[in-house]
Length: 428
Image (cartoon, rainbow, N blue to C red; front, side):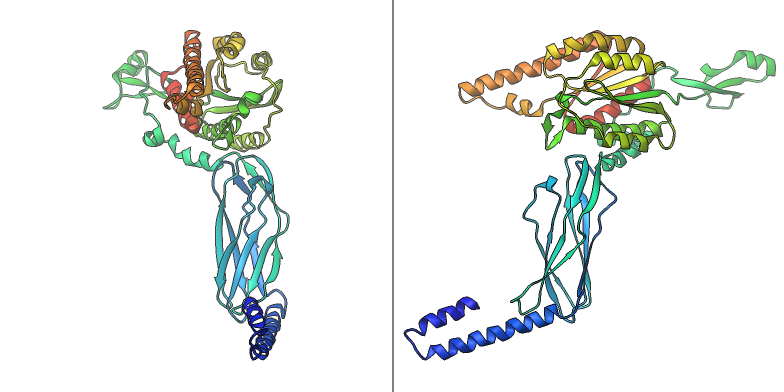
């Protein structure tokens, strides 16, 4: 509108009859401006807004964030929403426009996907309100300095929780594994009924009672299981915006929930240059929350891991035969050879599963076509790295150590599968 008036003023230099029209238009614009100011700024709290921040965010998952806006004006308004999102998201172009009828409320929901654990602070929720005239916008500000904590992926944990039921294991890549032998513990002696396994007949009890008696067994429970997380610099490598450390943390939480539902005891140990955290194995109801709080605070100082300290801690503190799931990463065969002596020592007393990662970016390079000499060099190095990973698996298996080589995104499923396989074989 103002541009049009300026053009009319310019034309009035040659067409003098347009000058009064330009003045009239400018006066009308001023009247509309003051009228717009009057209707928008008269009274207080004509717009009420609330950002419904959840108690916690789930790391690496989309988290819904609703914003509710109530219009108390006597006319419909247009509202521009500009939310001051935490700096960790590096998002500077957030804006959403809503049309809200008079005396009504509207809800707008957007998603945020964090990729780091920690505290996230929101700034102001800014609303810029305009009437149908549209010459003026009134700013409202709400909900300053709201803070939310980003925890390991409890969304992923809930997603896999139903897999604790045997009849659902085939979903999401989970394998149904046949039980081998008697991985059972004795429960009681009872009278034989049609359908009982004849191999469980207790002949001594049968002779005493002069009636066929059988032993009844139940699945072994309360077996100690520890997830061990390497929090050294090798776990800071990023894949799809998330570090290997965070993949391991998310997997640990989901796996611990499954193991607790299976009535096993679950513990946690983290290490780098020294032992960071040690949560003794337990099947208490509060154990999952304890593990969650410890996982939330895990970080790394980019130092090398000390497997000798890890061996010493496990030897002193974990005295019963346990399943140890070690999340780490070896990029070179020499890195594994330096730690192999400690891994072999651990596997003599415990069932040790070493979990390390495929470099999916190298996989893409291996299967790409080399177009020039530098790309030939890069492809050769990638193939050498892939070959080293296969040699690592063979080396560990040669010494009786279970292994998982997995893509980061398949970590949780592969870990649970290995746990179910070990349980079925009665190795612990």
